[in-house]
Length: 313
Image (tube, rainbow, N blue to C red; front, side, top):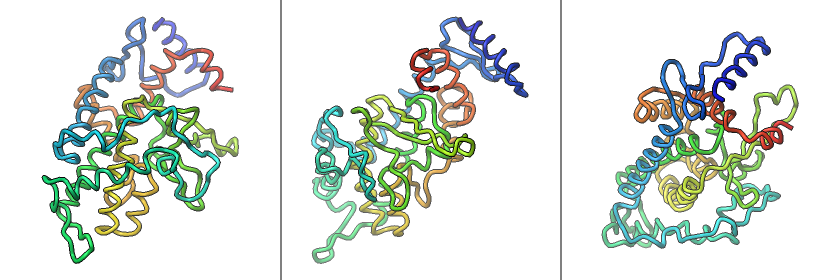
């Protein structure tokens, strides 16, 4: 099967008058590993990388954001994704299903902040009282923000590696969490009871005069991490940023999926982080553009013909 796939790619290259041939070729009949620039990349290796990154993410969250506290079941109570509500016709600035009163997240978002302010082991670490006003301590708060940023970087990679053929990073890094006034509807939404990242395919927009909308759905374990991060961790970040940084920074943290310290995460940064992760786990540096080609090759090899034809219509 892999032989016929490689022959097909060869014929496509000739038929399409392409200048160069594909830089990947499958090395087994099952299509579970391929050769890329002299290195063999397997689906098993990618799976191990995803598991390793997830472990890294949980270590940062558990040790540096939850501070090693073990009994924290109430931070994000168990919820059923199939019962969540999203109003896709609501284009009001600031709307996101995480804030919808019909969903449970609206009452959860302050849980981590309450823990930081009131837990016996943490009380007074991040703030002191000036009269009846809370004053944040800059040092510990900035350290918390740095840990949250490191966690966000890994979460970004987990989504890139698990939600199917990756979007172009120039688009992905500008995904919005909430509707922006004067802008388009948010990229984070629920479709058919599935939490998705919905982006436009803009490469051919100048030919068709319209964008294709492509929903991508990470697996459930990544979605639960993302929802927890955007609900309780982001709420604390916004509280700290509101007093310690600028109004522009607060706007980014409130409205965008991937804010950074002084600007949104850029495509070059995300591509470099992916390269470092693949170097650690796969022993070969693969940045965003070649990874998209590798992922597309695996997806095309294992595609369902019916769903693929539906997608092309």
